[in-house]
Amino acid sequence: MLDLQYVLITLSEAGMAVFAESMEHIKTKAYEVYDVTGAGDTVIAALAFALAAGNDIFSAAHFANSAAAVVVSKVGSATATPEEIFSYEKHFTTHALSSKIVTPQKLVQLLRSRHQKVVFTNGCFDILHAGHVRYLHEARKPGDLLIVGLNSDNSVRRLKGNERPINTWEDRATILAALESVDFVVGFDEDTPYELIKQIRPDILVKGGDYEGKEIVGSDIAKETRTIAFVDNRSTTALIDKIQTLKNA
Image (cartoon, rainbow, N blue to C red; front, side):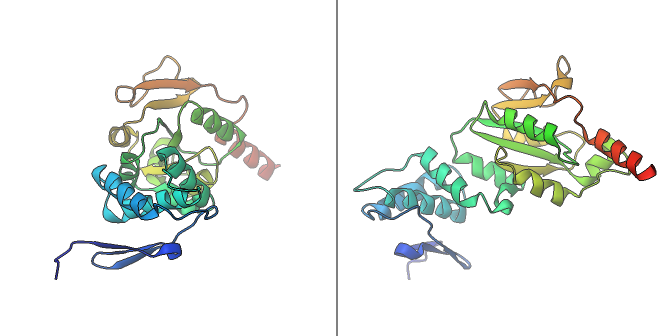
């Protein structure tokens, strides 16, 4: 009768339902429910905010659902800050590794509603070792979230040779997503992540210390470029050589 494009119905403790060409049920998670006062108003405000930022209806509804979950965990008529909403989402998606592995298009959409300082780094990360872990931990420090651009299998083969990668892109992405320091993993098929950096437009671009004094791809796009020293005697090539030596011994 109303010729609506979308219908969103809040379902109290059951979350909400979004009707478009199909129906999506978004379940509610909350730390603990203290007071549901203003939850509906929060949903409307957060939904409007996310849609105005360019998100689609389903992403906006997920954001609004998270905002409502934050509000009901407070006493009385309360508000939810973006930081609280993102902290809530991270808390409940820590164990959902797939939620951290995204396409470039999805990542750009997610960043539209986040007013956070974005750090970007990239690499093959073929066999993850202590040097990688410490590097990513340091890379995360100057910003609010860390995005790792991960070379596709074809990209690695062109850069490293036909014997690489040892691990597939899916395996490498899953291992990276399991790290607390990493917020999102996104793939690219080119030899460099320049086109990906153009889409993301990070605040800070980070590379390893071996790039000190060299031209860094994407430095003309990011607001700031930093280098981080590698951990000595830690590399994927060294690990492969060691394995080959043990195998031939």
